[in-house]
Length: 238
Image (tube, rainbow, N blue to C red; front, side):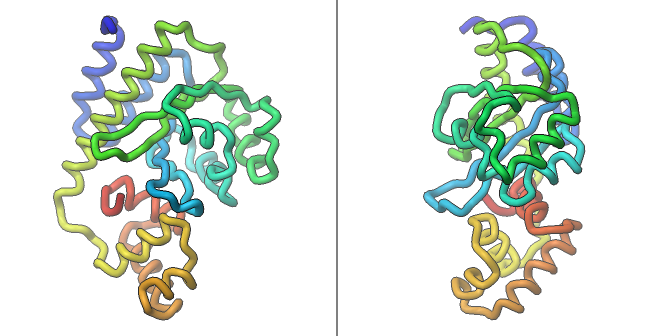
């Protein structure tokens, strides 16, 4: 596939990012170049665990919209994410799709719609270590011409490769969490409750909650969902 001048320029800007903040800025230039208003990177759960949920790791959306998207396990019920997780092909979506009217998605759909978003494109991308992600471009535009779609998918792959590199660099320092705190967060990321984690680790539920609260305090998180997302983003857990 011939690399266009636009693709080469946008990939150079992504490669030049020195940290995740600059990376997200460069990715926003990508979304604008293709007529989208927002972009979100989601990490798909690994392994066969049916209780684990997708996690928002980076997004240009306001925090209150991301909170609505992750509330009440909405991401796990989203039909677009389910399609993206079971296919390597990009998936177009619209808020007017009948299957977006699921009860747990109502608040998320309303919040996303209030940003002027009507539709978007979900691009499956895999990292070097096999970690599976979805890159969601959202806005209010028609489907892309095939050549532009191919171009954007190639840029999305390059973007994740750069993001993985930045994560590896950031994870070289010592972990701020203890081994037990990481164990608790790791099982939480797999969808386990405090009671289930206590049984798995042969400790009390109170001790599990203590480890969880310590981890949230150390990483300045307000809830478990944010804690899991941040530990994944910092590469403290996979």
